[in-house]
Image (cartoon, rainbow, N blue to C red; front, top):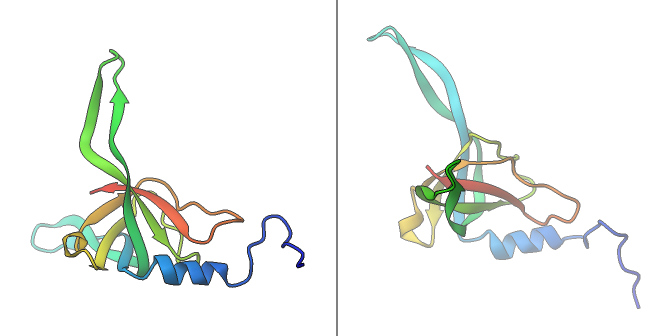
Length: 139
């Protein structure tokens, strides 16, 4: 009989095995808005090209239906009709932060390729994590 690992520690190699099993079907890109640049034609500052923070294995999946918000009057309404999604990335990927964009670059599901999402909260981390989860919404 073997001694179980101390609380909070995962067996060696488990995250890598889970990544190989779960994160094999998609390539995702996490980017953030680039710095403003001057448009010489108009003399105005415009958003620069996005800065890619991560591109590699990942997986997205729907997590709930459309969000429901209760207005002060007490009447529920659906916000923009966009459902919530979860992004799964390896623990080695940078933590996505609010305002980052996620683009599905490659997927077994051809309809998913090119879809863009907005990160709602920083990627979740923890002692027992085997992949990082990040909440997002359709952009």
